[in-house]
Length: 341
Ligand SMILES: Cc1cc2nc3c(=O)[nH]c(=O)nc-3n(C[C@H](O)[C@H](O)[C@H](O)COP(=O)(O)O)c2cc1C
Image (tube, rainbow, N blue to C red; front, side, top):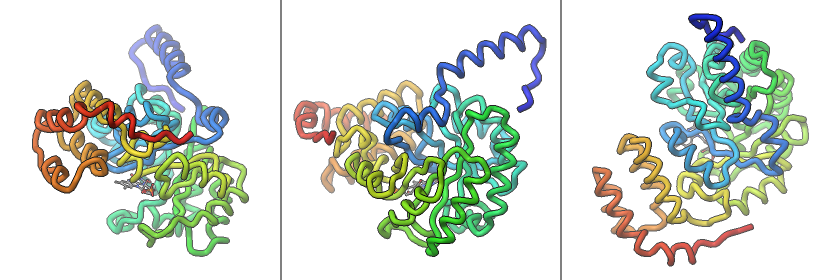
């Protein structure tokens, strides 16, 4: 990878030494994560949700690897502001940056820009939304396996650091053999791991096809992360048992309970408090702060409380509500949370 131009050579040497030192201690290489954990617990890429504050939160609760939301690779290349808003920084490792891209040049260039702040990049081939299909990105790319392979192979070859991860997230085809062929073809590009959301492009809440994930695990040698309906630590272990996947990824359930990978079956009060602390420290936008709390608190509030809470419009009102509702009862809440080993 070409080093960025720097003003003078002494600064350049200092920069390289300091950066190398920093990256060494901050970063676990992608494959280290798979070697270190018997079950790698992953927080999904989620547009509008899996941003820096949420990634910081889930890391405190048993998450081994976090993804950014899907970022548009072309905007990431063009706009300093886009990169800044998405807070892709060294402080939130181990991090995988997920991009939407449909050309090798754009994915590779975005990867070079993200390289110093993450342990890997991921190509989104799972987004089923119609706007994505119009743009020629996401799940529609599964019909162009040669294009996906080209994007991944060229990017893999452009990054000289072989410990840096290049990966891909796919859905399944109804045809199992075709799904397995795709996984094999992607493996041959040199990717580090593959995430499989065990539903077709058309499926939303249907049961996850664990048999397809198992067929992929059996067919490839790279680690596979199983995604779809991972709603508890117990379920995560069960899915690993059935599929043989090296890791599990959760989206909707980890939004509701960011502590699910610790075995707690509902959001513990300390997690809600930590969310408030992180957002106060980072001075985040109210909408994101509140939106996450709506998910986290939903199972803990009755219908009437939910209506009030969801309609609050400023941070102080939200903090007061949380304090009244939960912090007066924190001992009770802690007693009630069940830990699954
Ligand atoms: C709010 C939301 C945003 C999502 N954004 C992305 C995304 O940016 N990239 C992606 O690959 N998948 C995205 N997904 C899909 C999830 O990563 C995951 O594949 C899917 O929700 C199935 O997992 P689950 O059953 O645990 O929810 C999103 C899902 C949700 C609910």
